[in-house]
Image (cartoon, rainbow over all chains, first blue to last red; front, side, top):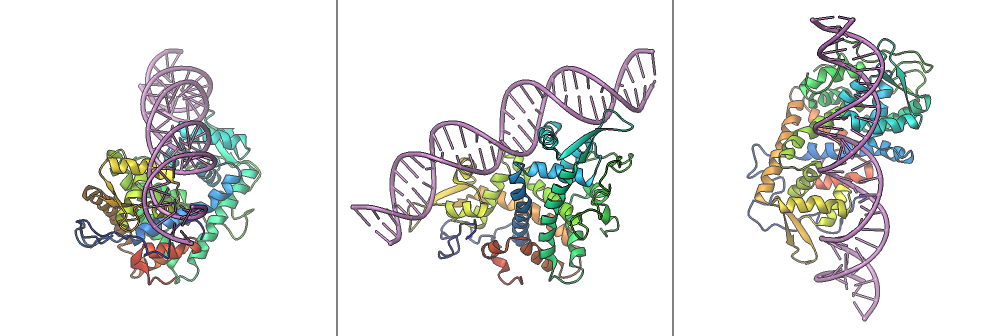
Length: 188
Length: 188
DNA sequence: AATTTACGTCAGTCATATTGACTTAATTCT
DNA sequence: AGAATTAAGTCAATATGACTGACGTAAATT
């Protein structure tokens, strides 16, 4: 067994069923409305966990964490991005970014250059090494996505893209679509 | 503007394009193989962020975090679960769970009862309050999922379920399918 | 009777995030 | 030209959620 610690020889969890509330786990009884369905929620939880797990393993060798990955990813995707814009994408504070960014710069993964027109700016770029690492991490995730998609009916990726886009807060979608340049045409 | 701090009046990010590496962001040039595509990766990132954002806001009022949510969720889903099994699902250590669980117990959200057959066990149950909170959080996420699904072609949810399942490490799938009882029949 | 299991706890550490205040330099506004 | 704003960085303190390693106790299993 890998990591998860189940005991498949025991009755699959839940040995108790004594209290008041009708003891149906995802109970279709006393619940809010028309039977909560948990499957998508839980699938998303586990899928995302494993999705981020691949890069995490590689990053660990560099003594980097997920925060470094996010910064590296968006800098590599947006060469010359301003610190302020990066903060906006990541929705973290300057102070949080500060430490992580410094480590990436010190490690020769990210480079800062003065802005052309605005000399207050420190535009961010990946170095060649940094770009290589970013590509490495991205292709791990890409491979997982490809493996998950093969075997699904034609047009599934389109459906999944639309689904994911619509999971995002409507107000945030325009900016994200802009970020993901390849999807300008995606039907909402 | 909500939260993301873009400047739509500026050229949509990236003002620089000077260095060596062909400055195509997701470069179809020098990259590993057949053009990395970033859209699904980024959609998943933002979708998951907003998906967890709804519960986070509610939990903040209780002074709880995402760790509490995960514990609450899986205890509510598996009434009478053993501490050991919960650790296995969450893939965290006893010590990490300890603090969070204690807070949930102190707040009257989760209840511990001695095992029937095995008196070493502290089986975990949500209290009525805890169950109510769990339902509350779940329905927020459920609503977001429903909003994302309406308008998609028939059978989309099936495709998405299969996709998400296949994003999970193959070794972990059996246990997860067992956890998500409603999906026993899901075609791999 | 010895071993293993379930649970808890003590103590220390780390990574990632937060808030608030303040500085410097550069740009923009009036 | 002077005032206000913006970009970036920094100091200091704090919180959360995770980790390791070690140890203890009670109950079950072998």
